[in-house]
Image (cartoon, rainbow, N blue to C red; front, side, top):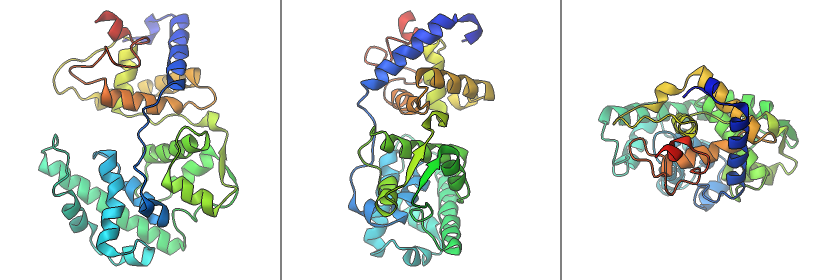
Length: 287
């Protein structure tokens, strides 16, 4: 694929189709309603830290599993656990993704996530605050929320974008439930995020794959790693295309791309017939 070979009118038309499809999109994946996630300040935060490499539902069920084990999820109780590695080992013993047999990768995940949880708990303890009370009762700019989140151990640029995006989805009514945002809103009624037009989408391998295929590029080879395509140029192209499709909030495109990439746009055998983006996809048109 080379965007240099595509006429502007075709890029604009594709952006309009994507915007229309998003307006009718109904497949957003939200965490199952769980009272534990709304009861304890640290519950949705811990789930968010865990939400990488494993299925989202696995990450978001972990706080309830931990609550049943500990009887509480306040900071004092959480700090009593000196080694989260053994806790995660126990939790993941039977539910590590069946398609991910790499034991080394599992250990790397456990090491990374356990370290992030422990460091974040220490951070909040030192600051005498929680992931909920860290926000004041006022309006924030997108960049303010992003940089506040970036200060927390375990939250890198991509995750900070994702959390801010999820807060924004809740604000515009795209989602009906987000436990971290909902807890903040309960304790900080004036909490809000303005200037959503500055919120670009986080870019992962699913977004890169879908974007490339929209413009006619396909890698059918077994085992192809789309992460290698996450280049500064591609990220900038996706951001600009998102701004074209959704000038009011470019990050809207992320949920659509992520779900399509996960459920329809398989690396080897994409389900083009049922894909909601088939009308705009050049790979589909060639198939």
